[in-house]
Length: 373
Image (cartoon, rainbow, N blue to C red; front, side, top):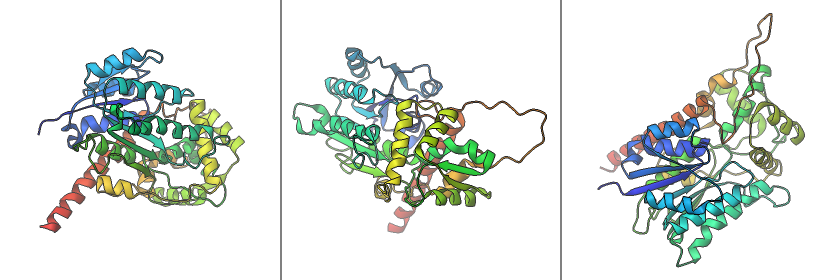
């Protein structure tokens, strides 16, 4: 069967968009279902977009406030499937309104939204950045009740839990002092999910086909994805210690300290920093004490990444440095860990997770087929 799908993705300069697009373009199981991949980005010259271009993607600059250009680009590339990844910016909701409206006018029928786990539990006055994902979900799901809206035919929402990769924001403290300073509180837990796992599910949804658009197993679904293990702060440190063979300790810090740490050691967009702090507040309120991995297993046929596997992949990022006597200390550089500016090493590690998941899924399916015979 000839490939028929033309996919567009947003925010491909960031971790999530880049990894999903890279998986679609490089893995034969997904690539063979596609005619084209269009990357809608506000930073077309970003290294991630340059890399995607080399893989065959069409990089299209999205200029906010110019909806007609967006519609023309989607029609020109015959886009029928849209992956909406909210951009890392304070105007996230407004941009998503523009993107959804543009997709509607261009006649796009399949819409996948990458949303956030916990948004439905967030309170608008206490966690506004987290709660705004509910507003974005409404933009996508409202189309279902409008017979004249093509986006209503085949929607899907993935609520991704907080990425395990956010722990990398504290790798400098882990290396220098052997501590992980995260404002999770002393007792409540959460289940961080590997970015590669989220990309796996998204790629399966975007390439799955059925009589009405997406595969009927995915169409209309609201999937929540977390990691497979609930962990309190001390358990995060313990899992890292066991995987790395070094001693790391959890340090419970307050939100003010956490905000300063993020200001000093990352280049997060202010909206993304606020989102992260709000998610931590959900943890402290006991609203993240759950695991949701059924959708991952159902969609991919594989197993989600365990914490020890994650920390093993990022071994060099966390191991404490040995003390040395030096005449002068090397200058510390401010490292970007934001959604909009991943480091090359982080991106390679996330890609490795996604590709290993693809391999594991294939092996699991082949084994099941042999047993059935």
